[in-house]
Length: 178
Image 1 (cartoon, rainbow, N blue to C red):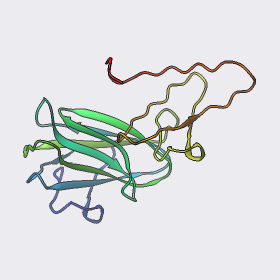
Image 2 (image 1 turned 45 degrees about the vertical axis):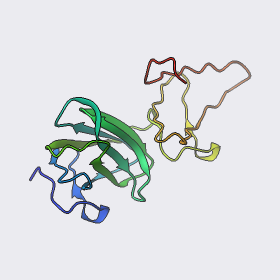
Image 3 (image 1 turned 90 degrees about the vertical axis):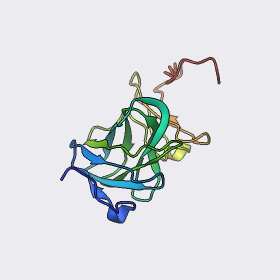
């Protein structure tokens, strides 16, 4: 059906997400963990769309996209509908994990994951060092997300000759705070 099963709290018991199709879920308690698996056929991107049961500025849900080793590729804390996209470097199984956040809501939510083989405009994790840096293409926007206050995103661009490199940064918030 299109409803999660319990117990789906681990990767081994994850409910299968069909590419582009919504599955309904519900956190039975503030400690419930709902885990879903999506298979990417190749390197590219995975978009996760979360249909929240409410429209709140408070963080009721923590939605994560993880690789097979449990590394968080992208995540959102939310009390409303949200979506995010992460780059994946290889074909394989990826996991969407939904947990309660600062607040708890036991109402039904929807989760959809969609894969794409298009590579190039979303950062990949782990890109924290020069050796694992994501490649920037001249004039093309690259989207990224800092997962924690200690996350480092590293990008590299190759210049064909001496000159000036202009970097444009589009911050997600318009704030005077650093």
